Image (cartoon, rainbow, N blue to C red; front, side, top):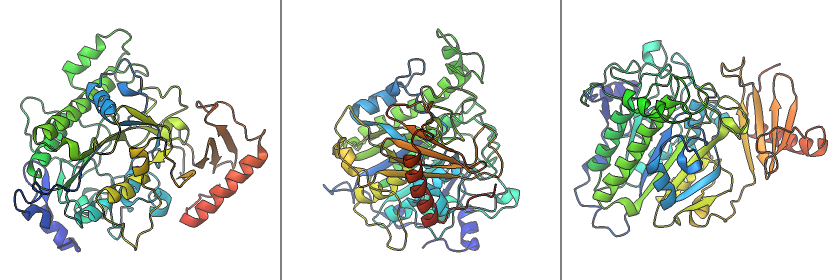
Length: 469
């Protein structure tokens, strides 16, 4: 029975175990063992691994030679690497709202990261992709960061994963997420009990919970959303791994090194180890061939601890460094190995893609902005029925990392950024100028006007709120 009331939610919280796990009653939890294993056309398992603030220049499969990501590199060799994958926003919460709803953040109404006391939250009226998958028999679970609500501990009305189609919520926050809390005890949820020996590390704990979730649901289709808190600042890698990277040639100094940051490298190494653990578990359970494994990030890199070079700027901006992200997809049944795709995609596209993979039509009551990327997964040169992408990032004041209130759109090779505080526009040809160094708005006023009109029309369509100057 869906959880519809605050009382139902509190009952669900009563099931919170020492391991930081909330389980809700769901039909999938009572599926007889082996009921799905015998079906040759079993729906694919979907494992979505999300890093936090990981820029596209960080994984080895994207050319980084300092960080060590052997398992991600292997994943890319076995699947497809996207070179122009975008986040729907340059910060956390709007990305996650877009992922779960298939809608642009402006349409949902969550366009900035949510504070602990924030009155905004993901409304339970939305039919999330987790709920869609549950309709066709999937077990669903989120491990780690949610960040789509304020928290009762801070006086806000909560809208936790249990209200949005997740059967299990594991090692997730109930106080807030900022500031870094990578070693037990975790300030974002003091109720979580330690499980690993020694000084428990958060990334390791999430990796452990992920392979255990797979083991629990090996006999039924499942959707696992592994949402890491790393590599969000304040960076804090495991000391033994930090020491390894500090000893490498060219290593930066300290947690705020902007080049070859040893703490970022250590955190990414721990995430990469989890990718290896997941792939090993899938292979051991004979599930690897029918598993869609996705690795990506929620926005671009935090430039206080790394560089997005050759992309411009980073997190909190609508320049490429703030919204272009790594994306690797492995699914042997349809994805050709060791391939790359240059077609622009956005995380709003996962909703219709997952629905198509699970053979379920999106709910007719909910508008979907994304398009399925299944054609690209089969043939990286395929064309999508879309040539435009949009962003809306209104701010009452500049972001502490330097981002300004603005909107943007991309059509083909061209990208327009419009700043709300001044009204100025910047126009770039991304094929010729990936670093967005040459503003062509003055040289191409007609094209800038054309893209500006498209952006205005889109904002009107999604009822985007534009702050007053």
